[in-house]
Image (cartoon, rainbow, N blue to C red; front, side, top):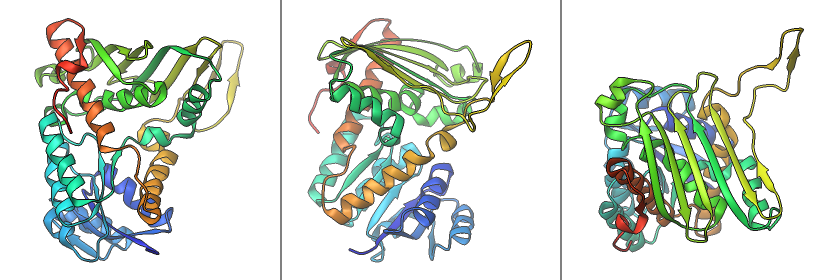
Length: 341
């Protein structure tokens, strides 16, 4: 397969990111179809990038014989249905996280993908970030010895609208889910227990929608590592993305990325410009790398990473965190993760 023809479902923010990367940065692929319930949005993006086919029904894109693979970039509540339609049509599938918010429904989706025999990758793009990949390399290679403590910091520059929270699954399943996957990726062990605390400190409307905007979670891993994750929907200084791991022979940590390396010095202070403002700027390279890896998995006929089971496990940890917050106690992941995929 010289060129992989891609159909994208969803012409919103993340759909645009992937479409532009495929158009300008990944020569082995070509976007041949863009689909969105807002047909005008799809037409606009198609006009900008020279995409030949536009539709407003994902079934049409999934059944298009010109399409080899589908990118699912639509709203969370549509992911499962779109994945099943694409699998039934024999298309390879990349989906943004989460696969679904219900583990039973995720299991149905994974069975459909397995029956179809197609490639299936979940969009945990941070695994493909060079900085975090180096941390994993250090841990897996024994550079810091046996890992003991993990701390992940993930804070957005501004909160989402409350109507987004009402369909996204909330902070643990739309935001911290990335951090759950990163924790598993870095430590190389499954999370066995979760203890979550949360509060509404930023936008009362998020609380009215049934969610929190500030959260701290403690993770216990099967291999004994202890981890913490803190999330905030609003860090006024920009997108805060850091990791620290302490091991028996040393530690490793990351810093935020900045648009430049300039430092200002005066009689009153030494300072620099703010870090990169949000995920589209901070993770530009990782978004290219993850789609390139998906395309390579198709071309080279190998299993892609992260897998559907990775996607399921991060949802299970997120559901355990929600249960812990609601009940005010540590929750074993096994309490919510029963069943087989």
